[in-house]
Length: 422
Ligand code: HEC
Ligand code: HEC
Image 1 (cartoon, protein in one colour):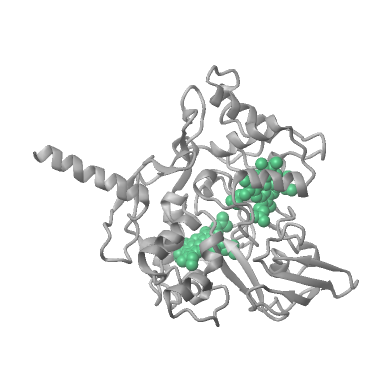
Image 2 (image 1 turned 30 degrees about the horizontal axis):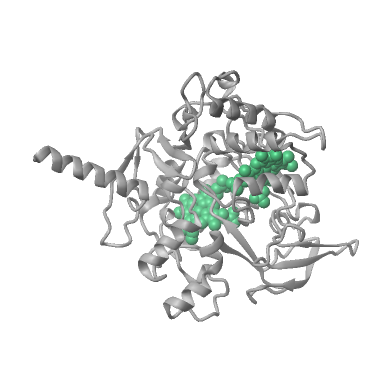
């Protein structure tokens, strides 16, 4: 009797945690867990992801989980463990269904247009369409004062952006794997402090409290607690439905091995031991890893050439790149389109986001974005800064259509199996 009650309690905890309601302290009627054990499996379409913290377990009680400002948001409102510390549109729609769109994640700061009516459930469903469909948050503001270019025309389907007010739709970046990560912080490098990653993360947390959380500046020890916490997190796919445990049979997948790796430049070698595996799912993942590492004959490039921090995928040299994700050609109809003119040469280009160009002011940095970590991808679709790729297959097709990669059907399937196992 007692044992079965205990078991039932344990299972409830497991279910609650894997659904991710664990960390949500905002709504009183939800179960709140104080910790996640290391390697605790959290389900996604391809298997399970998990987090390994160098603190011994994932402590869900620190400042990262406390609302720091006036609008009820904490870091964990948007960075959720079961979505690899990002957040998916599925989770956002779940929160909408639960609260009728009054959960703190729904704030006019991130509405399609903050001037729209948001007073009823129906109006909120319409008015937060970018959050609900693509999981993108509204960033931007006035163009940087000191710059080489001007916005001369804007086509914004939501009617908010104009030539003096840039809207940038951005996916939540996962706060993971920083020990193998670059010093670039934020999609456009807006929080980067030279080569000092810690200073960049400190700036980011500081500005989030006064920005997205609408708070007073937080005490230094609160910011330090947040940054210390996020830099302990290693998150990766733990097991996949076909191949099983991704650290089995001599492979080095999963979060625990990731947490013990040191930053090096070069090829991914997680699945070398599976090259001749008799398990076809394992062999396919290993083949996909080689597709990722190899130079593509069609364009002379490799995926790992830019995603050069081995077994993580950020840029080893802190580089940002233009991969055409903000190009007019890759635009989806819900994104704004800016026509931008070079002040010196009169040349124009059209982009859906200014990228690093609005951080440095440089014409040549327009459309460039941070090279992100590629671990735990299966837990956090959609992809790219603006969420234009709903699936990993869309990502690979983007590289084929816009960066001249050429793959056979077999190579594409192998590459996808690898990306899903990261
Ligand atoms: C309202 C949602 C929201 C909240 C709340 C939020 N973030 Fe974020 N976070 C985002 C989005 C969106 C991005 C990507 C922004 C961009 O680059 O333009 C991001 C990016 C980041 C990055 C950059 C990661 C990288 O790889 O460069 C870090 C670090 C981060 N957030 C940490 C935090 C911390 C710490 C807090 C709490 C103090 C926090 N976030 C609160 C939405 C949020
Ligand atoms: C020229 C450098 C470059 C090359 C080559 C490159 N990438 Fe990327 N990758 C990037 C950058 C930069 C981003 C972020 C772009 C954005 O979000 O706008 C990115 C984003 C991604 C993402 C999305 C991650 C996320 O969190 O949304 C995936 C997946 C990815 N790349 C896989 C690949 C694969 C597979 C290849 C080879 C077919 C490849 N990349 C080749 C630079 C590159």
